[in-house]
Structure formats: C-alpha cells, structure tokens
Image (tube, rainbow, N blue to C red; front, side):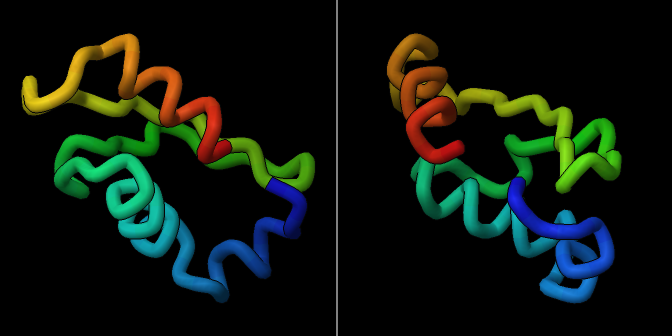
Length: 67
C-alpha cells in the first residue's frame, strides 16, 4: 500500500483493511487473516479463505484485482 505504517494504523489498521477487503470480495471478514504487517510503504501478508460460495480461482482473481 502506498501509505506509511503510522497512517495505516491511524486509519483503522488491520480491522479497516479486513472490513474493506471483505466487502470488495463479498466474503465474511472472519475469512481474512493478516499474518504480517511491515513497513516499506505498508506490506501485508494475508490469507483469504473461502466459504465455498465462489470458486477459489475467482476469489484469487478478485484478490489480485482489489490489491
């Protein structure tokens, strides 16, 4: 992300990111897990699960288009 870590955290941090991603991907927020947050702009490592309502290939494609 093109922001500083402090701006990311001040803007709601992980909770806001998960909420936004879940909305954009049409999945439950509980299916998104952030496993690492680092500086360098902001670098996130995350896992996105599926509830089976959409094919994994479609979900993966959506993740790439959102990011």
